[in-house]
Length: 292
Length: 292
Image 1 (cartoon, rainbow over the protein chains, first blue to last red):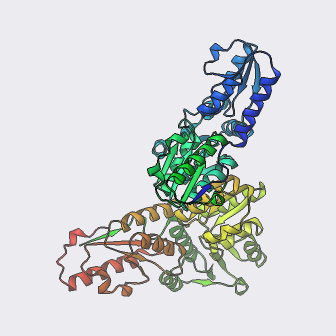
Image 2: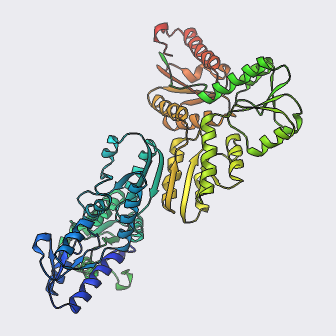
């Protein structure tokens, strides 16, 4: 038996950076340190941050003092304005890759191209992004939605940083039929691309696949979808207790991948749980075959 | 039994226009009227034009007098220069859609984008096109060739006017992985698009499919490939004699499509040949079921 972990599983650059910024600011400031919305989509990490004194507040009207950390997904300029008016200290931990998408979106709209955003309108990254274009831009979250679009001379398409590359390509493919000039800006971040690619590859090579992360995490859900299409025996695992012996059976090759917001200790717990089930069943696996 | 003809089969706008120009010029001029290369990729039409006094010459060095018609595929600027030096009258019958591609290619190269051309380097349209970019541009004629390309910041892709839309989309899909900004200019002409689309649709609905045209015709070959993938019983027909009774058997639905350079009388001959075979076999079809 072999447990194999997909490359780039777990925290991405932007998430690591936002947590580090929040923790450093917490040490430096005496007053309240809040994050506007959960810093990342993972209950466990949020709980740990709360214990360190970093609370999460959803509603801007409830913030009246202290320091506010802007999470990696970013916020719209109007939110920044509201915080400034309240004279709240703002620490911007928006992921630099997301910042680039915000700049590109504005530039596209300013240059007269119709902006297409391959993303989820309810995801905080997209809610923030649309603030940079004053609400302009057509958000496409399902292929069905493309059917509403008409022939157009000039369009530009960008993607949510954690978008599924195959979904993005499929949208492009359909837009080609109805657009004379289509500027394709592949804004899916490298970390997402590599994680999706290695997850696909691993799913095609193993007997069963576990995707570890929070169900609220958009990118973890996408990983699950990608893996499930390749390996039907793919399970979404929020914590180690979700793993049942019948999921593992006598499978030889077990694959694990995890979203950008999944902490390493949760991945470790999942590995230990699988090892435990296997040991109890006396499969006689050797420690040296674990791969990390 | 029903014979169904795909929409937009046969001569496209550019071909009709070039033939009309050549015939009008022939009537007006007293001296020699030549075309530089075959006016269209169809032996029969070329033979008819010859009878009308419009000869085809491949080698520019053999042209020393009279009037030269530039065919719908266009020629590179250097060819025009050579003809001008010889003081030959030039009548430009380049298809306006092809002219647009030539302008776009030049603009792309001038603006610093790497130019990708989805086309056949040996096709006259592409040989002419590359003259407008001073040889710049990467011509992609098979998916294999994309593997030689490296990551690049800015690229723009255009297509041979008669390119297969699915091949074009597949190239775009692969370029997305290695290009930060990709400008997609879908330069496949409307006539080609509609013909390919209606051929695909028809191939999926009939029992046997005939693609009529000259084997030298690039766009007819593409039609054949598209139909063959959908309906394995697809035949390339250069003339009515190519149709054998065993190809038709007792099939009920017979589809026909034809390339942009296929004359209507050849399509008519193919229809008559099929009718003849069916009649001899006493299938008892009614004239009213023929569709045109």
